[in-house]
Image 1 (cartoon, rainbow, N blue to C red):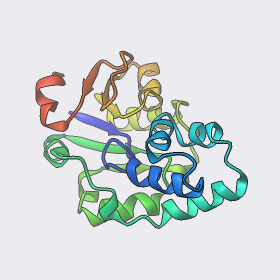
Image 2 (tube, helix red, strand yellow):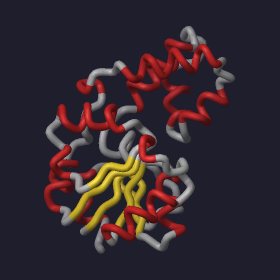
Image 3 (cartoon, one colour):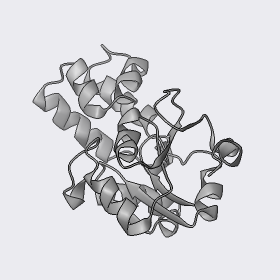
Image 4 (cartoon, rainbow, N blue to C red):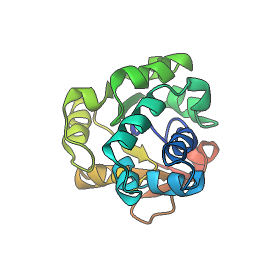
Length: 187
């Protein structure tokens, strides 16, 4: 199977650390749980929802860029899927250095044929341009993400989709944990 992966919230459990920093920037006036909920829609959505000022956004970005890989662990049973896949690629809005810092820490970089990041200049999701590039280069079978935003481009291209820890009916498949991958995703 050839899989296109989202990064944050799909490969690595990053949102708790992001929510903690956003709540801190908002001086604790917004709970970590509320930040987490809005960040799961998108970072720009959370920033807009909480009316963050430019200086707060700058501080938030500074704080999240210094999060240690230990605070962003891979999801349980993920490595088993990465090892079994014929090809894995990533499409993320994260910058390449930030993505590689965590991937290298967990020795996961070796599992990916290509990592497309914000540095590559593609439009942001849900624009399908980056997905189209990866799909035609690698003949992707499945796109996995944790938000609808991650699978909308794949749906536009006719790819099978899987949402991780998200109950939206938009996806072809839904997983709560990677232990059930082979049972749920039957391509």
